[in-house]
Image (spheres, rainbow over the protein chains, first blue to last red):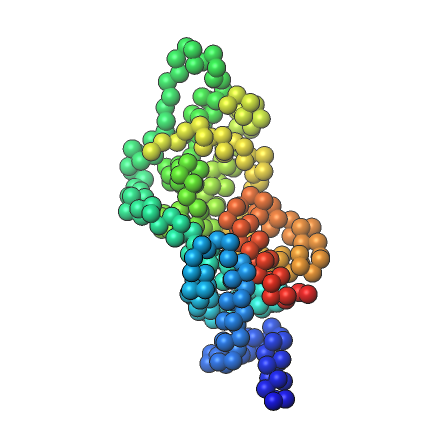
Length: 214
Length: 80
């Protein structure tokens, strides 16, 4: 009984070094079970508001997938935090990635994967032709900035912005649609913001002025 | 499918917060465990890692994951 308690307490207080040691192939079964249980409890607390039905089954699947990723990435853990915190972030991301995909599974990947840079129709700018009346309400500046956006942004950037800002598709899902990853999508949008910012500075147009006219 | 003024408005609105040295989602994810740990230990994570904080302010998906990570860690009482 004492030995069992001692072993159990020891597992509950693994150091980072012990976690790595016990999970390095061939992993210690007790460590796997401990980590899995830890992930399950954490995921339930993290995701219960986002899962309407079948939370237990959902987190079981996510914990299993996360466990495999954690074991696979073990050599990338650099010890900047507790090992369990590092492991939990991987599990939480796994959970949200799956949740976001499920939420948008009705969006046809086929429909969105038809992106071809040469397909001009898919990224056509909305060329509005303002009439005289409209011009009284709408700044020429806005039209100019629309033109700048058309000139500065690539077709791919325009396509991604359309998904993110108009269709409200999560970046996780857009990344899948574009056969890319979330980091690359963020960088692409960042680059679009930066290009527009730099061009507006060159043109002597402040963002506040533009927004006032919209 | 068209680009329109809604996109322009959102992009222009984001310009004041746009900087060349922003972290991407990947860099943020690399550091978020350290950031969360500092936060839960009552250390000044925002001062120590301002670029992570800025990314969380900008990126809804990373922010959602970070907040859920904190929930999980609090539930598990790792830092209490």
